[in-house]
Image (cartoon, rainbow over all chains, first blue to last red; front, side, top):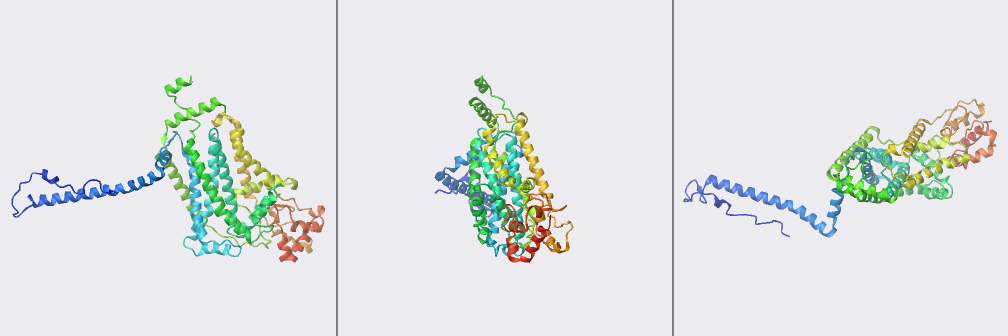
Length: 289
Length: 236
């Protein structure tokens, strides 16, 4: 790979300067005055540095080119980033990406909590106590995860409200609406399963009632409740079951569905605000008549 | 939407998109500002509100009223509004399931091509009503406290049972005299008039959902359990 385009040194540049050639006497060097010679060397160094800088800048571009050549990611990313969005998309349009950001925040803080959390009925409570009291910034990260869930639930509902009132679920975006509703349900399931994990009184009893609510459903209800409890009684398996659902099953589903959701947004385009009417171009207007 | 309407929409959208601005950097900038705000809110909430733990979970406890996280209050309140036991499953599973199905199918039954909220009044009114109902139920659910006092006059031999009941979280869902929430469970002021003592004990051990079972209390602390049943059996 040729890292440095062009010769590094271009001699002869200084030959343009018309400096009288005299002997090597005092005050003279390389046929120039000492000052002029220093000057020229300085300039040469400067030029060298600039060429190195340009060459260094080439490296990431060439690395990107290497990846692009082998993945074809370039056109996709360009299509995603530089796709046009109708004018007038205001702050309401940021609610979806804000929800995704809240999810990312939950994922990151969740990973750190999982480093210290032990999902057994005996140890869960004390491990959370350990996180809160001993671990560096433990309570802070725990708090971010706890309150982040509220923020995410609010944002997901707000985003749904925006899509509803702007009529953005209509043709051709019906399927993206369905994905969105599934994401909403998964978010609520996330909130429900996460609530048990600290294993304090509040979370324990709320989950007992929550699972009992599931059990009251017709047909599938009792089976769903048995599945959630890991048996007919609330026991040791219940907590690890909730933990696994909370940190493996649902986050995976959410991440995959967010990917599909975003793909469709990019593919179908961001909805134009309902108050916007297209100023028809003449040729299109004529076509319509 | 029929074919003409679809085509008209696509054409109009094509023009609007064509006249629009690139996603990067215009939309990305707004999204980034919003993401920063979200992160800031989460951090401030974490610092201000903390992540305090309650007392450790104790399945044998008799002193705890289950409370869900606030965003489930609307479901919780729905349970309290719908009282007859035969209809409880409508509140617990029926309404949420119907709501989810309606939400998923929304684009298929709302086939009005109009997108302006003022030009599709039914959808807009339905949306606002839903939000108002959920907000109302959430606030009501938040205000329904976990009472622990029973002011009903009691014969002295049942005093201890009354205390067990007051501290067992029954009042979170049942009304006794002037105390307790009026649902989701039935009022217990005259429960002994409807159920014999044995049936009350059976219900405590083997309740109808969503009531939690008190079988652990029976195992760990049979004296308290019997006092509780005696007290309930005296409520005629």
